[in-house]
Length: 163
Image (cartoon, rainbow, N blue to C red; front, side):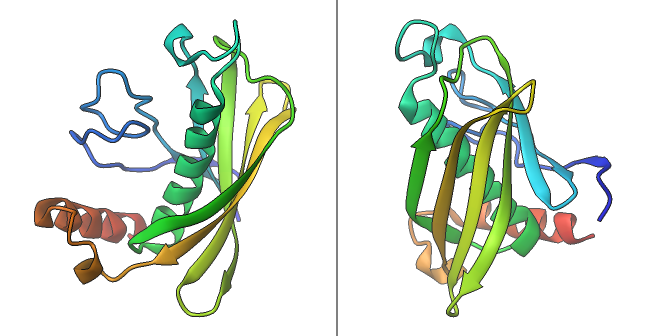
């Protein structure tokens, strides 16, 4: 697989804290593919701080969960929910530092379970935090709380990614 950077499409105008474009305090993450990895580059601002100068652990977990989720969206094109996630905090994730968050599929177990992993790295390639997650595929009819319009937008996104 090529290691060329391929920018990936995303939904516009939604309020998701991690990837939404309509959330004024959100992260507004963009994604790209590089080899088998789905990645996002981010520099966290002061309002995502926990300890002085360091990212809040919940923000770190959000970054890891989101890149694993979009890895599944882009590589599998399915609806799913996070079932569980194990995070390992290795080194401080500093505010104002250029970071790369990357995720990859690990395996599929049973019929509807998918495992993925993610890591947050600094500009020198040091792993600062990592996670392994398990996700459960859901058929669209099981997503009763998701508006029909958003489900259609997601299906269109799945189709775009496959082209």
